[in-house]
Image (cartoon, rainbow, N blue to C red):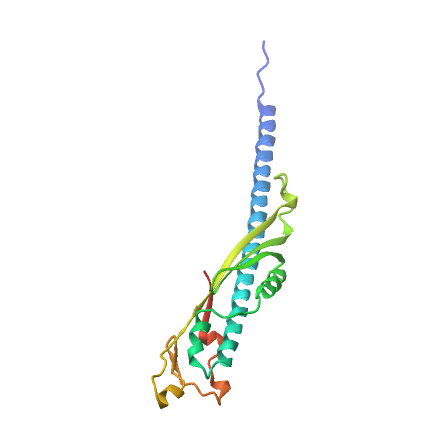
Length: 195
């Protein structure tokens, strides 16, 4: 008589193979998650750095506008960004550093626009995916400075000596040089946003 076949021991190797495959997939997903987190950190650093550069320029333009307040013919150049400003990239570098990244480049491709590229200080780290231990995430961002104000220069005579009314968004400013605290601030004159 032939003894009956027993299949009970054959399922165990299949079970081990399936569990090992699932474990590998879980570790691969973890590596993808680590990379996504690192990439998100790089984008945060890039956004902050670009905004910092643009805000620095906005503040400089606001100061220049106050300096030429009594000469409204120079206002338009300031609102269009056609004046000399100091390099704002040092500020972009500070914000990148505060977000655990380094500034790779900072430039102004157009007037009132700043683009930065950053690289994270930390790599993706060790994982089941080979070669990730030295890979650092990079990101770029662009910030735009939009002038918010319009004005009309006065004509001839006594009106020419009066300062024009400045309309910024939905607010009208009656400018009084003797009341510097009542003058618009840089954030009233310009909007800064990612673009």
